[in-house]
Length: 316
Image 1 (cartoon, rainbow, N blue to C red):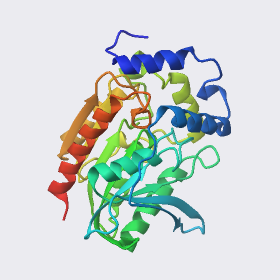
Image 2: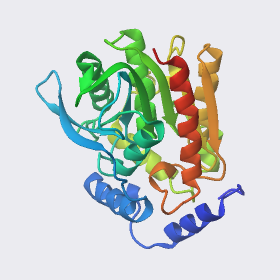
Image 3: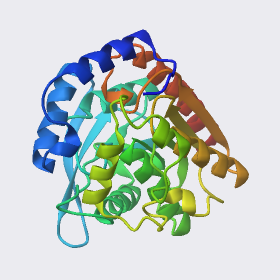
């Protein structure tokens, strides 16, 4: 483990995590890893808050499937405005609506905007490009509907963490290339993986001891089985010109740190309005670790303030 600045509550969490006995994610089958993720959420994340509207629904896919989703709104009714479409993290292998329930509700409350969380298919049962396919289908469906639970929308903003941050970027690129019925006005990518071809220096420096390990990253990639050179797997390789304004957020103890930095720079070089933030001394996954790492609440508040400002500036 390299000598890095670590917040006291992050150090306490990592020390507890690293001394626990039992298998790590990369040592088990995906079904077991999903159970482990659910148990971690129960002890490490905050409780789901009360919210005015929390409704499950299903999105029809072209092949006859249904994509589960969950709708949140801090208000019972509101005027027409933007909708946040959220994609959860979990390395494309774990994660679901329940694990991200508290995060999504808090984001909807903090932004004072409705939010739709998408439960896309996971690998290895559905390897790449199943996840980006589902996310694009869901986004286009929402844009076509323009209305959910009595709320009308005139635009979309994407948000997501980790794999969901990647999917937010990839879905925004797809809708830039072939626009949907509603415009995409902003993008929030929280510690995304954007270039699966190579190891950046932070991958080596932070790949052991900070929760997300090199072994786990390999395990995720082995199950997801993407085309590493395709922009739908490695969006940093694609052209960022014409993308919506972007909020890119990293954690300084994250092996993916340099990827987030590289993506923010690519956006800036392409002329995309971009804000870049770092959670100094925090780790990958902090969005769903806010009970175990209380200082992450301040990171979330900062992100919400920045994203709210961005949306207000670019909303129709």
